[in-house]
Image 1 (cartoon, rainbow, N blue to C red):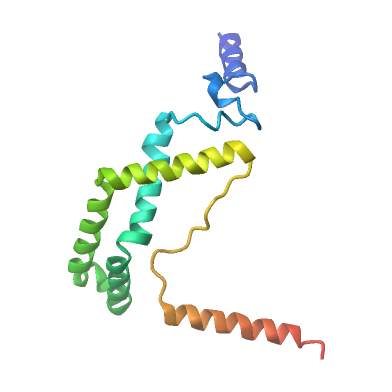
Image 2: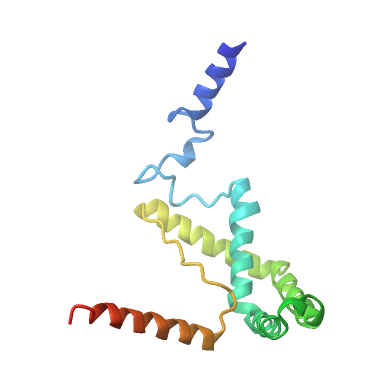
Length: 157
């Protein structure tokens, strides 16, 4: 019985095992760049991730900033005191997440990135930044880093 399990695992994890040939073609063996079909994981994970990220950064940033400011102001009590901001933020995000035209636009963005990756072999992953950044705290953080850098640079003088 253990022989069957071992044989099955070897087949599944062998480098020759690929469920469909279209994922192996192309100039770098990464798939056909012109193939526009989507796998289940792309439809259920990758594209919704792009939709969510773009909705946060492009469409609902005002509401997210308002919630961030409210959260900073009230601290622990933000759960109770910022309900209005949370509701507005969630309504905005739900609106864009369920917008079919926006989802199609995000799907096209994903397909363009995947095509570029399959053609060049270079993955262009965007740097993820927090959705809300307090500008004053960010400036203080940068000043602190610069001061420390200058101190270390002039240490030998």
